[in-house]
Length: 74
Image 1 (cartoon, rainbow, N blue to C red):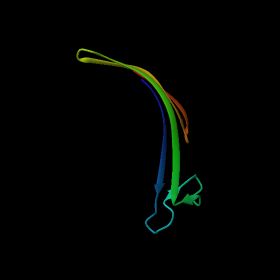
Image 2: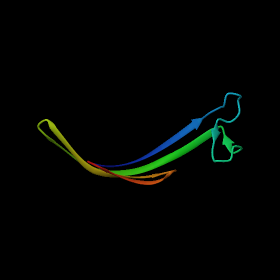
Image 3: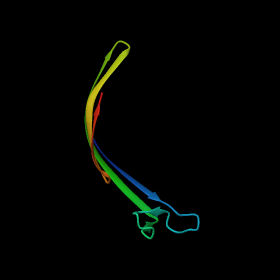
Image 4: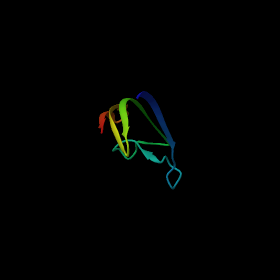
């Protein structure tokens, strides 16, 4: 199995007093009503069923707003 994907997460938030609900950095004045992040990924995976045993082997690579990640799967 092979695959690629693209995911966009978009959020809108208020604080209790109606001010922007997201703090975007360590600076307390750096706030926003919206926050957005995206993720791109590709994976390859082998799956086999032997009777009552399922075997999966693969890898996934992600490129996100927070950095890159390599995730092996077994």
